[in-house]
Length: 235
Image 1: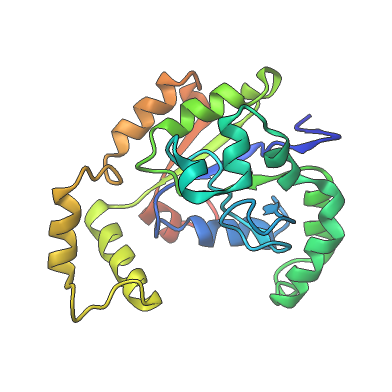
Image 2: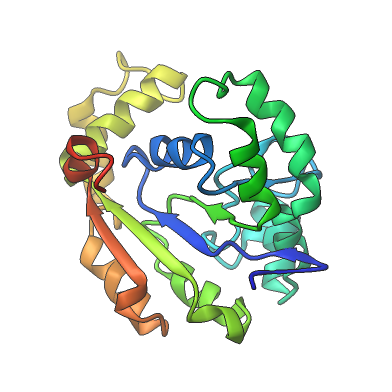
C-alpha cells in the first residue's frame, strides 16, 4: 500500500538524535530482513552516497533555506511540494543492486540474503534520519505524505539521557576529526552548546510537535536508550 510506479514512502520512521542508537537499530533491522533503507542514484540527491543503501535521507529536517544552503535535489523538490524524488529513493526495482552492497558488508552470517531482498521487494522501507532539534519535521512530513498513508505510518523514537548523549556526540566528532580535543574540551563544548538555542535534548517539545502536526500519539513508539541496549530483542 506504500508503493506506486513512482516509488514508495517509508511505512516506518526511526527517529532520535545523533548517538541514540538509530544506526545500530537500523543495521539490525536491515540485516535481519525486516526493513530496507533508501537508495539514491544521484550524487547530490541527499547527504547519502550515490548507489549505496543509506539510512538517512535528511529530506524533511532542514530549514526552509535548505535549497540555497545545501543544494540537495530531494530537499529542494520537497520545498516545491514535489515528492517524486523522495519516493524514488525507496524504489523496489533497485533491490538487486542493494543486495550487492549487503554482501560486501559481510551481512551474510546474520540472516539469509533472500530475507533482505524480500523486505525490499515488498516495499518494507524505513527512514532513520536523526530528527531532534527540527520540530518542523513532523508537520512537513504530515503535509506532504499522501492522505491514504498517514494513518498507516508508524514511528519509533529513541530517547537517550541528554548529557550522556552530548558526551557521546562530542567523542564522535573528535574521533572523526571534526573537533580537536586539545582545542575544545568537552566542558567548553557543552558550555558552547548550552549557550545556543540547543533543542536536541528537549524531548517533550519534539513529541508535542509530533502530535500537534496531526499524527496520533498511538502511531509513536517511545523507547529509552537503556531499554534498547539492555533488552534489545524485546525492544
